Length: 312
Ligand code: SAM
Image 1: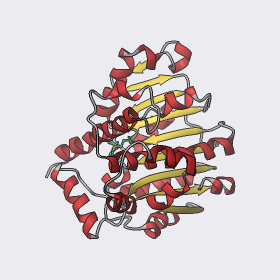
Image 2: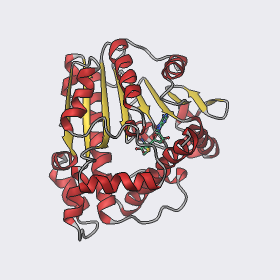
Image 3: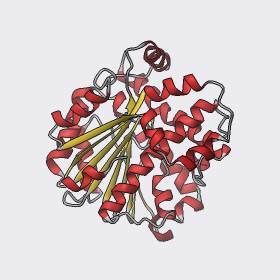
Image 4: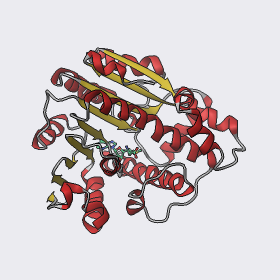
């Protein structure tokens, strides 16, 4: 099969993720007053999906908050395969003025993101203090501390050029995020990206959220669902479990790493928050939620001793 249909299917996973997040937001799992601009009419998802997304969003947020605290927000965040993630606006509203935020995705996805931003004052006003946002062509944005670049992550030299065009500073503490992204990329190419990061940044952390245990029965069903949608699963065999997730970082010259499955991540979320969201919907299929949690993980890699504290 040619690359194009697969790429389109992979790009559509962003619409799915956005809809699922909006379903949870509409029910009150968390607040995000920006997300609805990017998704038309999100259908209500089953309780275990809403709860799964809550764990994913909160699990990542806790680590991002730790990174910002450790660096005093004097740092950069590069969101690989960012899709329609609203991180920039959420941090802005929380008063966290990060030195630079760069969202990266395929040009067709960033074009849609830029189009929505252009048409919505509520989004535009927060960028560059409401000043002029410089859209670069249809697929990019360079405005104050916020950048959006359209590039295929598999094209490493283009990725590097694009990050350099955003004025990335290799000496500033930097956080790379990849939320359900690396699984779609051939593992040697992921290795190249990880190696490039570890050899070029002095102080850096990488938060990766993705599937694990894809070879058991439940995992096979998850893979089959993605195959039915013609998604390339090039990276799926690379990191089957928490050990191999960590090994990917050590193989690519990172100083350290830790990994947790989503059962552990969920349990690390403060009890009061869990109790609040557990009251939102009755969960009939507790077992299904646990199985889902066992098939996703968060792995953090770091370079620079201070950043080893980006954990639960
Ligand atoms: N990270 C976002 C989130 O969690 O809401 C989006 C997740 S979505 C499941 C996967 C995203 O990765 C899509 O937006 C897709 O276009 C992007 N992606 C996958 N492979 C990519 C590649 N080779 N280059 C750029 N973006 C890629």
